[in-house]
Image (cartoon, rainbow, N blue to C red; front, side):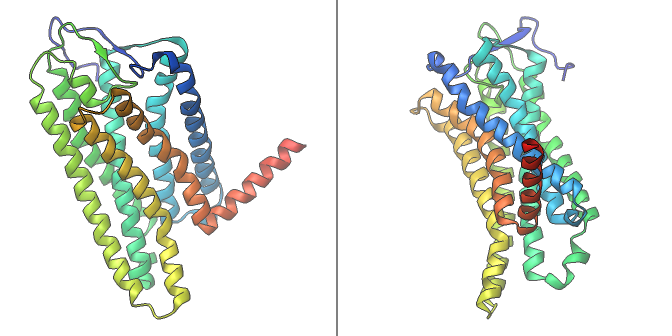
Length: 318
């Protein structure tokens, strides 16, 4: 990222403003943000530790949950520490290379996370629609391969974003009215034409979200058809329960992402701080809720997490 070149008159640093219009409340805003961040870290690290430690959980579904936990940790950590530095210590400056790197990393991990959610839908489809062949179709090696393909796709899709940004002229406005280097927030600082940057970002959002949502919808339409053919009410309920956690995660992640993307581009009548708060909720709320959802809805993981929690409580008490 340090190889990116700005125009000769370009700045060496940008200034992140945090939440413009609510500067007096920065310390108060930092409290729920830090609580969400720490809770998300603890939950996701606990999931990673328990799955890594327990041999019985070394299965494709739990490998996917671990991959999701890693992306959750990466996204929230990319945003929150810098935001807290702004709120607590007024450290608003960020280097241009650091800003473009943050833009690249944030959006790359988001696309990667979308690919993981699609893979989870495929996993549930095979488990319900073709259960007898599940262990031969869905293996750890195949899930790892799909993870690598998802990462490659994310890199190829997002790499043009910082390159396009680096070619824009930044004249006198070096202030980003945001808590982090969001793509469009950086592009809007430019004194040049940002049509290419705006169009690529918007097309990318709809291609990734649209294509991935279509695949998830296809998986669940086939799952629904298979479930409706099940005559046993108990089996019917069990099949639906295996999908509940993934559906909850999908709804939370996609709704926040879509709302943040659309309001940032088309919500001119919405107050700027609403854009910023919703954008940050997208990076903080799913990482906090995902381990809770999977911990509650997945019996094997719930049992192991309970054992781990009891052990930790015993150690602390003694």
